Image 1: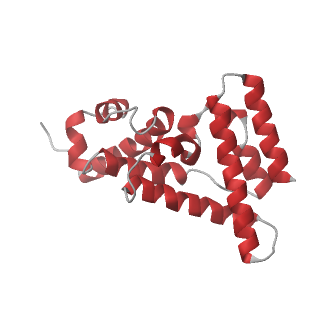
Image 2: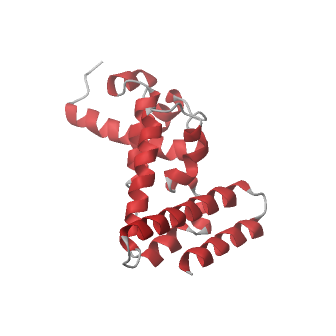
Image 3: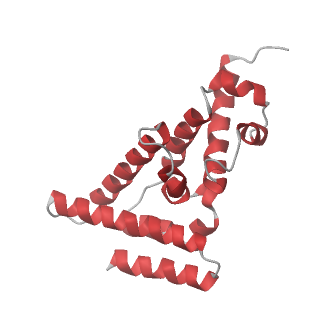
Length: 180
């Protein structure tokens, strides 16, 4: 069997990480296996361990990839994009904080995924603080953490309820709270 070039190996790795980032958000950290990820990436299961130490290492890298996807714009734009029914309906393309909070809460303290999640919370809170009107640094941080908790909580709840109208009401209530 011919060897894969270094360039192709890099492309394959990036593809695996992107696929994993989507699948983990859709199905949870323990709802998808390595074989599923590799098959979805169009690769064989055997190539996984040549690229990653284990599934946890892939999950940590996939989390970083998912978090980096898009947090641009002013506060109103970020909130409007985050608090949307499109975000509710598309967890595989949405925020990993909302998609994986429950799974990560069950990970052991100090795990790579939990550490990445913590940095993700801090990073998104910092983005929100930077978009918050000027004021005392501690006040902006408190407001950004409250905003982040409202954003993530609204998406988590809207995804969990079995009532489309209630999901919409949760999103609208969160929007009103954050933009007030």
